[in-house]
Image (tube, rainbow, N blue to C red; front, side, top):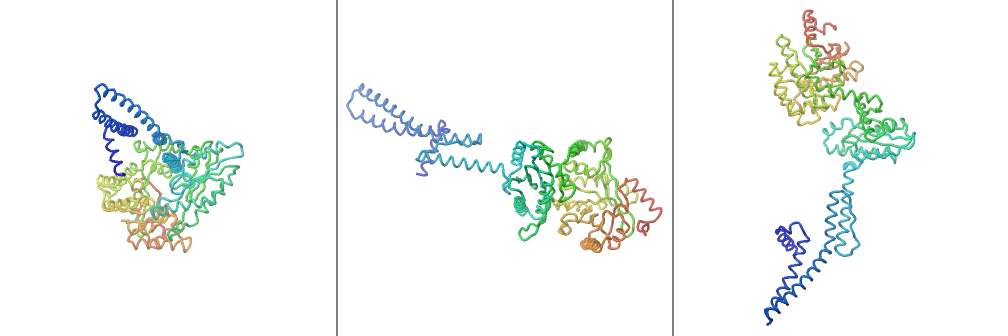
Length: 570
């Protein structure tokens, strides 16, 4: 029975007029089922009786008319009985087109009534599931960004008194992407669920909590609000996040940068309020981990300046507004200048000098850092080659951003710069940060190994400011470790600070890495770095960033005096 039905259905579907109509298939079967037996019986009757031709014809006509009338009545009744199936089919099609759940009659007690009731229930459950998927985050169970926007808009429309407001806190998880790479996505997902639970615990009964993006949560509070109340809420949020998360026996610590915007003071619609909070959280991130920042009206001017700089930066390279300067590095044993770090500068004809801290993040955000970075490498290699031809074997260091490290053309850019300049690859040092490596560990490892095969040096910059994983030092093909200025600044301030600095130097040397200390500003710092065996240093005491000509003049002056910096300080 179960195999016969599909076979019959398939056989009928081979006839083109029946392919798109289930009703036509039923009608054909009913028609054939009633006519074939009747016609066969009629023919047998006529043949087996001795009727004249006129009588036989009369009988045949009457029988055919009666059969057709009976068949028409039967087919009409079948058509009406098939209406529930047609109704269900149309209801499903309408739901797929309009996403509106139809109302099907379910008061019948037979199989058709059960089928329509089941179809109604299935459509209702499907609609609820789709609505939940569209409005809630599947991982945390919190409302998503679209729901956040809709509810914000609803709350803003209900502001009916001048002392009522809607406060929006955007909580950006500091370093979550790096943490995700270190611990894995499974741990990252678990951490996000735990964060959602903690936010639920600190929020009020009427507060809205949402997951605004991958590593960003939102808290909304409405009513008679004051800034101090929002600050207390933000502080409780930070205190909750600062407590360690224990996952699979590991303790993970986290912080959050929080941006706060208040309606109707800052904005009067949902999109504008979210943009204000976004701008505030951007400033909070720039100020450092675990910072709270309010939106202020002058942020509009900052946003306008950002848009202007983004536009101008697209053509800055072609207009030759970009330049490089070089900060000298000295050998702490000989006191002589042995290398430089290449630093990018932008001088706009109308806006003047633009700080690197302002335009470099813009270049990274818009992928302009790739062509600009390639130009910096070419310029540095050409300058280092000129110094090499003058008998000055200075290493030249160039910073690589995370975007450059991910760019598939990086290896080709470095190779082309070395070949075009004729520079000895050993004199080019490429500096990367821990965060740049963490963006994609496997890809970064492959890229760094390929660069190292070219013969260039590789330095890990700002060591100690991120996760400072020893696996980087062990597994990555590094040649140099640069100690962050934060450790150098505390040098000489106490035994603990000095011990940490000495331990970093000893660790790097045990891994056969050269050590460069950044931010040296005092003679006391310089003397301590000498005493603990640091290889190189750079900073204000050694020399500020300056042009290539100024570097050459400084080298010539020291050569004439035959007095390295070590002797000068003595």
